[in-house]
Length: 406
Image (cartoon, rainbow, N blue to C red; front, side):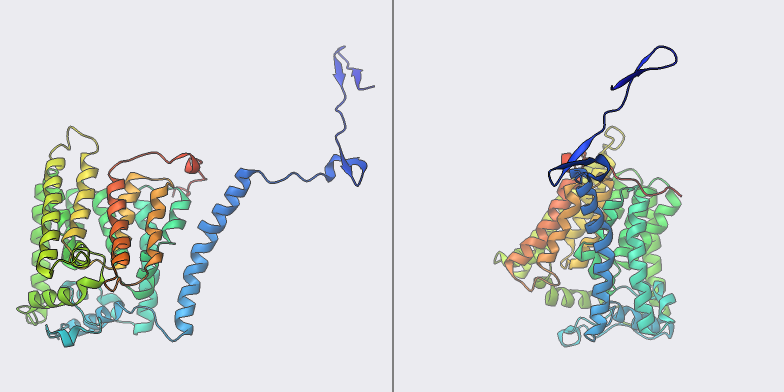
């Protein structure tokens, strides 16, 4: 019998025993193991590739560099040496000649960058480079956090980007600049903080000057003007401490550096060169394109009060202008792309995976057309796609557990 009568006269059915066939015989259901669901396999794959692989890959690359006799901080060493020089009032600059710039181990930033990096220069180079590498990783995570990204998968895929990894390995400061750009966007209506951050960014890395244009175009002219004045004052004051050494030859130094290295980067100028244009024509092409984008910043920015997306659109255009005007765009510059992606897609979507294409052309392009096209396409596609804020497509719609809120 499979039923009985309860105390209230209610007929209760006994649960049927579930059985399974085991070597032709029936056994208890407890021995039956259910196959993993497709969603379970997907979660396991996500955790493996986006939680386990990024730290293992990064640690493995760091260990392997030391194993083959390479140190961290190839790009950081000139900055470390410059910080020590300026603290003693000495010039950190090489002569503006090709023979003095051939090994890419020269300091070419404004002197204020050396002063800003001075706290790390008190340590021996090996320790300072390791500390900077740690700061780069923390800056990447903090950039996403500030921009409101709570999907842990976005953190994992970002740490797989070759531009981000390169920042950690060679000690470039682009991940720190990305953090500054994120702060400028997140607190864009807090005038004092925006002024200080924007001024620091432009003084440390001049190619980010279109961000000041974005502030002015979106009716934040006072913050833009103050940031420009503060940046200029900081640069001049920092040069004063070293007796204006290298000041008069600095424009010639940058021009010589661009002539030597622009062809092997991923800039619009490099693209013009692979098309067969002369250096002058390629630079003119980049300037025309950058100017057109700046006009777009002005037009779009003026609609900020009528269009809720105008501010974001103008901001993305300003970043695009910075890339277009720069005659040199190294791989690590593309770490800045985390900002436009994060402000338009706060959960995992296909756009987060586009910078992974830089693994196909690690390092410099060396003038190879296919490499220039890949690098240029990555930052153009990301910036163009970030213009449109959209929801994740079906393959990415499942929302994982968010990061804990502090």
